Image 1 (tube, rainbow, N blue to C red):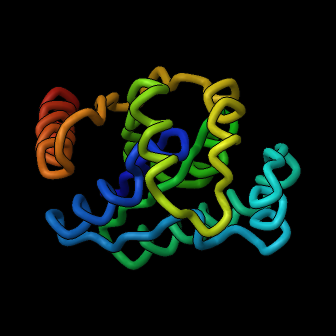
Image 2: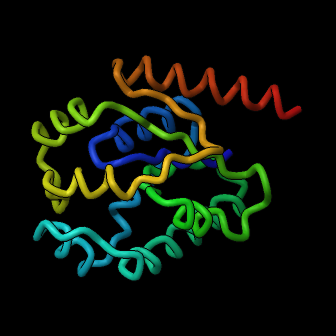
Length: 169
């Protein structure tokens, strides 16, 4: 099982991802940790990344997930994965059904409040509008609204993943 927690900045990917990984005995990785320095500098200056900026980063994340799969590890990746083509790159070369995308959704107001309350190394809160505009809502992801405690949200995710697994049998 490899889960990609996706959504805009401030949607709770890291908080929920760490807890989900702990509860499922999976390896956790935050995609932000894999951005090259140039991407971090660009975002810190308030400039959104373009597709060319993201492509090498997404390929690195794909190799990370390929490694998890090849090593037989469960993994949870917190990654914005805003566009379908980004999600396609993340899944490239992975056996069908290996990767499940979980879209952490929430109101712009709630997410904006979260961003304002936290200090992030390079994510400028002004970029939220750009991310919301870039987001292509996934058709094949498990959608979970992150409007409860992290524990309740993880419970919801696990329930939805279990239901999805049963319906695919």
